[in-house]
Image 1 (tube, one colour):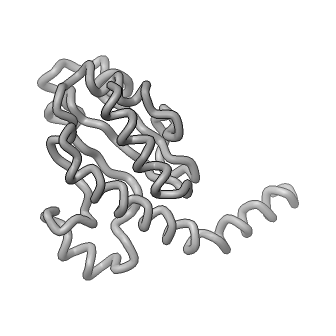
Image 2 (image 1 turned 90 degrees about the horizontal axis):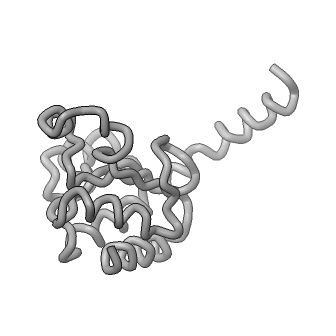
Length: 152
């Protein structure tokens, strides 16, 4: 391993707990916002009391439920595409676990080659949006999603 790569790896490992704390705090705030939004049909995030996994999260991961989750839009396929395209802070990327917040409409991207039945079975229905929450200010993320949901 090159010295710079070793330095970057050790720096990343040393700050991982701090970054994950922020990821989880931001995801909690964003999921709570979405839960009450009139354009959102459902939110699947284990950190919400409504999740079937909530008690397990409290037991096994008391510092947070992670930073990747999905939610369902009212409005279906075209609403999903326009919501993603209307975001300005969230990046439209398929990878997860980045320091930046990412948004994806699986039905029109990663799962587009599947039939509607196959997408539903895979949890990538027409109304599904996947988020990977990053380290930005949570209020900025909420404002970005709120604006995107209102204008899409």
